[in-house]
Image 1 (cartoon, rainbow, N blue to C red):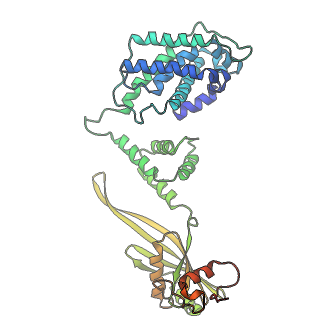
Image 2 (image 1 turned 90 degrees about the horizontal axis):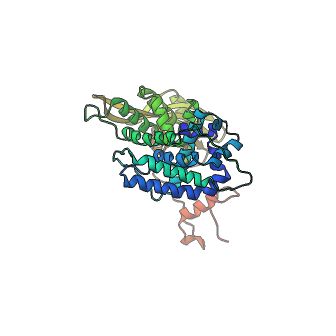
Image 3 (image 1 turned 135 degrees about the horizontal axis):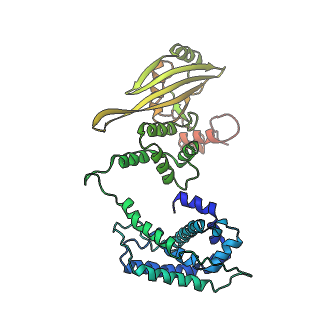
Length: 414
């Protein structure tokens, strides 16, 4: 069932039938009749006997023939039951809802992919099969499932008009599933553009797509795939807009995702000297690596902490061919960096989004000449007292570092 049909079913009141006691009591029997319909379509080589539209057509024939189902809808104050044209739409949507419920129940039997065999029209045998479904509906109408059930008839209705339309829709849907190629061997340009747009949008997290759908007033859509499809259809002629949406959402909140990482230093920094070095560089930049720049920002100092702010501007570069033209696709990354240096502490605390930014930060620190990164955390001196002298001093240091309580100090034997 499409999102539009699902919304229409909710609006017109079709879902009230499935929520009612009558459907719940007769559900297994209705499904048994639909099993006969599926077997009939298989014998007739219909092509896709699990088509929701075709099954919905047979379900419509059953429900519309049950006078007490009509009475239930009337008692539930479903206004569409009183108007001939609205009643057709009501039956159509109820049929599709029942088909959807049936297919969920038979999910183990339904192929995971739609068959590509073109459906055949069911011809003269269809009327007899629809009559069989209608007779099943009339038999269901003989049963009472709660007190004072109401039977309602509409003699002027064509009992099979809606059912035939749904089954015909199943035949027509094959055309959209396997459309004809352009000039016999080309995918039409609008189809390719829509596919490219959707592929780009599917890179985003579902939360980002939901936010974009809300901003575009697309309503509630049931899945990530449905949201991407709806946005792609809206901008199928403007792939630049799709690119702007994806890049903006991927960039995200500059404060989100920052992680504090420790960069070991050879010696504790002299904060006054480091402050002077970084202050002189404010407003300048260096190319720390190929296509990766560090732009020096503000410097803040307290008695025991020096905070250095900056920005990494880097590019991921991919040559590409688009529309017969070759170009360089340079995707920019713009990440805020915060470096904290503490008095008497032989490490720098670096707030960065990506682990790869640490290579740039190491280069920046080293090239100031005042803060020299170490290859690894310095190994503490081994303890000579029992029972700790047999322990790796790095393990003891880390345990002391992690425990709560007094400042870090070397453990001593008790």
